[in-house]
Length: 304
Ligand SMILES: Cc1ncc(COP(=O)(O)O)c(C=O)c1O
Image (cartoon, rainbow, N blue to C red):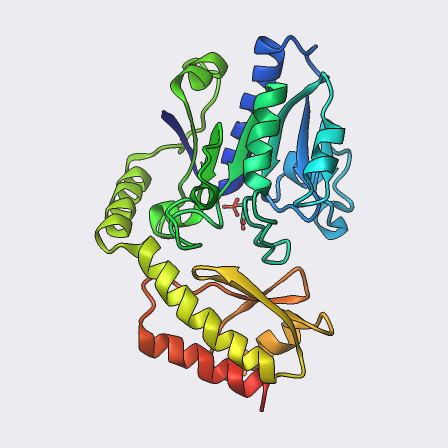
């Protein structure tokens, strides 16, 4: 494999789109300009023009036209709808193996495996954006390990440098990387700058040495069980879902931010996801006392 380093996550998503389009052009003979990539409803891959062009959330793209063509969106988790969108111009599928901003959504079991099969059957690239859910967040180092498959392209950011300095990477096999990019055909001034890469290597060491994915799995399970107990007594909670330290609490009235503000009054910082879900995504180094801190505050806000 080879990794191409950039700064923010969105840049590596763009790099993956370039790779898939070039693959379509060069390897599949799709006329340049006709390449299509399948994405998913409620996706979030960043905020630059091409990326917001295929957002299905109006607020991310309104007023920023003209938008970039070449994307088709399927309902998240739906294999049948995905296959219906595939045609002779399809070169890639870009998907978050679990959706973060889109509402902390976990796809049905076998969805990722099904995508792998579709990609193989139709000779298209399968690209996983694990910027939010990679690096141990969901209880495995990489989210794709939950279904024991390997994407053609993996995109990582955020935690890849311990969240300390800007670093993102697009990883793919050597032959695809060499096919798509020659020296000078892609890059950026600060992409792969030494301090960011040093931080990245150190963060990977910490993740391995401190067994953070395993810790995320165990602590996440304990935290989710406690949240499920709170939810069973709360008049406000519709559903609790998540894996590892990636947990969403969906509110019946779709008013998650109201509860995030109440949590903030109790000195706990949590964001909402897609308006309807409270996102519980603490640092992977969280200890048992800190789990209790979260649970006490959720109890106060959701039950008392
Ligand atoms: C799944 C996913 N992709 C891409 C991005 C964009 O990353 P960045 O903000 O570093 O550009 C994010 C950011 O939240 C994300 O969650």
